[in-house]
Image 1 (spheres, one colour):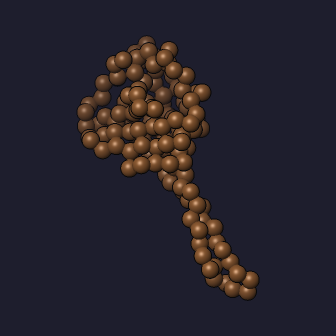
Image 2 (cartoon, rainbow, N blue to C red; image 1 turned 60 degrees about the horizontal axis):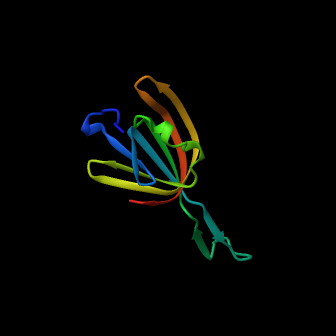
Image 3 (cartoon, rainbow, N blue to C red; image 1 turned 120 degrees about the vertical axis):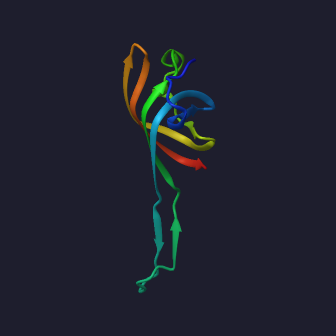
Length: 125
């Protein structure tokens, strides 16, 4: 499978479940965490604050899938899955991922996803 060519400096490689599947022009990650206050009756200050599990919201833009990949696998039905992004020797992996939105188009040169959004419940930098 050949990837759509991007200049090396701009190239972000995308792996899904350990398989190199695409080149990505950009990605954005936002992490949120809920905090739970433990209060006592009659006190304005909490006795503790418990951090919740972080949730990562990831947006990929201009995902250029490897040729023939849409024939190989249905990404809409993959859940949960692992996404790994790599650029210039640095990688980040997001585990327990679930798609929330895919904006796709098919062109003669191959499939392109203009925007892919997903949620991850675990990451490793």
